[in-house]
Image (cartoon, rainbow, N blue to C red; front, side):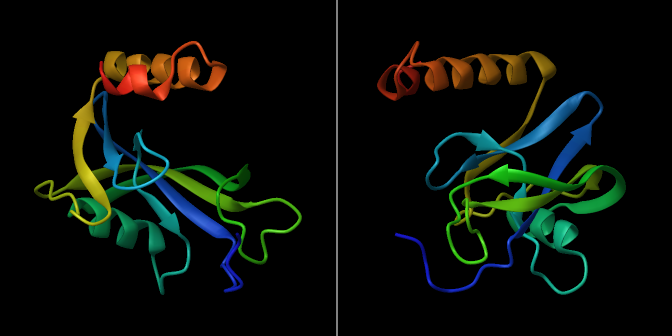
Length: 141
């Protein structure tokens, strides 16, 4: 059931890089899985840097915009997500500094993934999406 509380209708996402590796968070709630730091674009000032700091404890040192207004369907069905649930996204590739300190409420952890590990995650995600494997099988891997 959608919330009647209005939503900002916008999100930010970051792709933190360290060389070829990318930082991904293990999500603390549905949908399960790993994802880059992201959140609602409703902070005062720089919401992307605020989300990265909140979820990872890291500070943004450089940025490269990847997408400014990308519509993605999603779980948010709060107004103004009408007629379809989703958000307008802003996405940036970023560099970070500091000690990784994943937020225990927002995440179940975070770590740097190599390109090969990310490809493995993509294959599992595609298998789940196409029904080739079930979530029960994935969790036993």
